Image 1 (cartoon, rainbow, N blue to C red):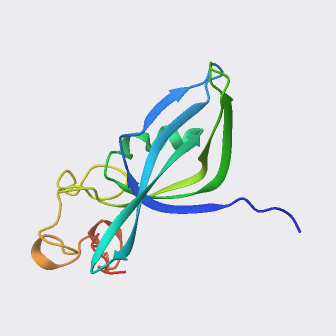
Image 2 (cartoon, rainbow, N blue to C red):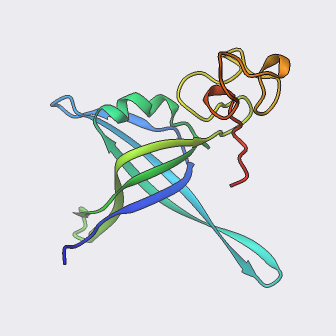
Image 3 (cartoon, one colour):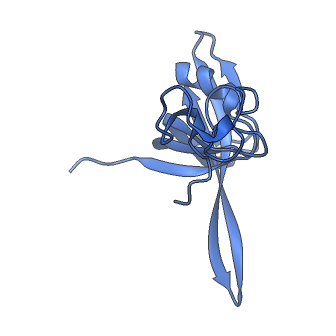
Length: 156
């Protein structure tokens, strides 16, 4: 049987993504994710965050870097890679990073954030409330179950 190295993460960005380029022109988009695990300690629920460094190469990194802002919820599909190096003092160090194959924008990070590509709802003309358009009826032949008027606060 072949070895498998596959990871799927859903979390929030710790800081804005940074975009840089190699000498050959390859885009490298780097960001960090925080993922909270809740556990019960005595009578209280405690959040235990885990932090993951993610690297996304190529055109997808260039395209979505501007939308990867602190607090944004994203899904990452990729694989794990262990980087190893030696400090000037001679100590061996290592760090596990996620090499993303695909990054998906999932949810909003705050007020006025549409949770997807492009400008926020307020910049697009917005809606009068969650899931509804102005005047209470879907516009442009939309059946109300998709497109820009779909609510971001889905309970599942």
